[in-house]
Length: 414
Image (cartoon, rainbow, N blue to C red):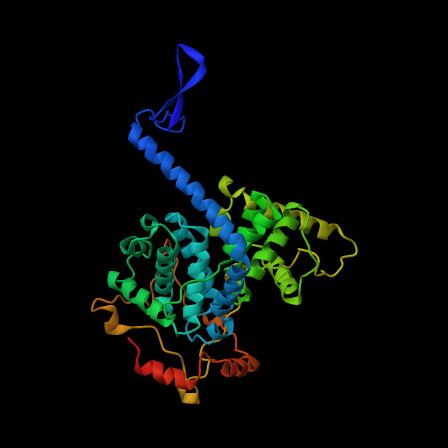
């Protein structure tokens, strides 16, 4: 029931059973459709209020559950070190590809972080051939998009195959997707860094530029091994603190920073130089407050201050200036360094190959496609001997015990 004014007399209101046309309603909308829209808006308002009340009541339980999930779904970089073909210098090429695909399909921000989490968790459990590295990334993107994005935003297999320049058969995407899900026991849920960032931003009432800068820093961290095993909650807090410092915003410090958070903050500040061109171009857009340009300007100012200092002082932990590093020169291990079965140690199950990927499997060992980033073959001159101490550490921290792989190998789908 609505109220309408009479054109002949504006001093009183007359009740009417027909809803009045609102400014937000299209002029050609029927009365029935307008009534439905009003009812939906009321239902949405009631649902939002109930959700807010329930969130306040169960917030502590929700956060406790998220902390538990955070620990359960955290990849182990030491286990990825055991890969025999996958090298860390290949990672930036794959992350560039995933970021471009993520942007092309306009997926949610948390989908990108969930994709990389699924990729790293899979690489922590299975030995991956380098020709399948990009395929695993595409399967992880498919799973993450289906988990959190709208149905019409989920990439189609033929679209991903086109982005991969037709390197794989269409059936390989589906089979790899199932293989990733089975390997992870269908445990997909993971509180991403974007989830914790949103909570902190809402609590501290940070501006949009701080939020965008923190997102930029978190995506820079995706390229580096140092942050594979970093908890998303710690990453969110460190990236926001660093974003405030870069933008000249006051820091919200409650005095509860522990050693791990301090180390994470320092390590983040050392990886801000020379980010990926793909990522820098993404965050140069006005939609993201042009934070990549602001970061480059800030680093240039810090470098100028450091050059003018006389005498030059050694860098301290409090400064954000560090020795420039190249994201495409991340350290990698030597081939053949991980002990295998011949040395008396069990190796994890390998990714499917051969007939399981169809009869028309494409040979992908020596492909070189400039537009489609793929995992390169490591050069002999860049290979370094793997330290003996790390070999012993990886032997102690193996993927799982022999009993697990004996049972797994006998029941493998591939």
